[in-house]
Image 1 (spheres, rainbow, N blue to C red):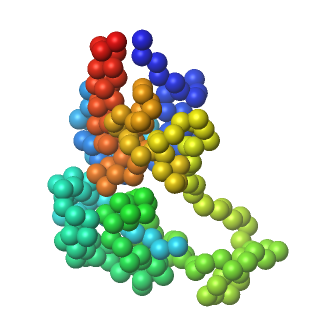
Image 2 (cartoon, rainbow, N blue to C red):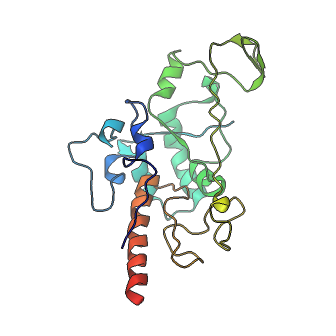
Image 3 (cartoon, rainbow, N blue to C red):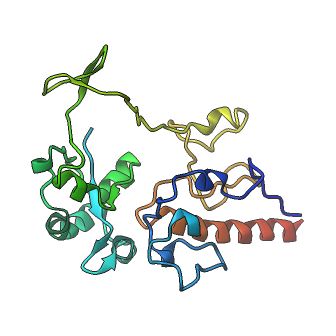
Length: 234
């Protein structure tokens, strides 16, 4: 008997709790569940109601979703893919240095494969920076009684400060008695396939340049097939 665990009373409780304007960064065609494609009536980028240096990519490139380009170039070496895409990305995004943003030395594919960091997709933020709606500041030097002092600019007063620090998952504490499954960061050595621990599978836990939701869908099908094979062999 198959068993699915969900931490809340509803499926995708975290997604349901986000703000109403939240949209997927991956397009509709690459964000559906296995065997359950999103309806054609949904917009290309579905909304929540329907479902240091920074690397910024356009959501679409030459009229195609950026994910389509990533899938088409999946077999290319990361350095080559980044080299091919760089001119078009620069043309689409524009100069980030003029906006006060630092860009990494690595391209987006290398960043994903080597640093396990996913680039940001621009959904209108750059336009808001350019029109002055969002102001960019440098690194924080220290907090003051009424605001923040920056490394490269004077202190400014702020009513609220939000520390969006992110997190690094380490699953070793979840399965302390299992060996040969995690790397030095506590992330699975294999995802979407069998591990050294019989019957243990991980799904979608490795950053993918071809879209996380798409990869989860592909891995879920493979895991189901592997699990079915294990049951049939008993």
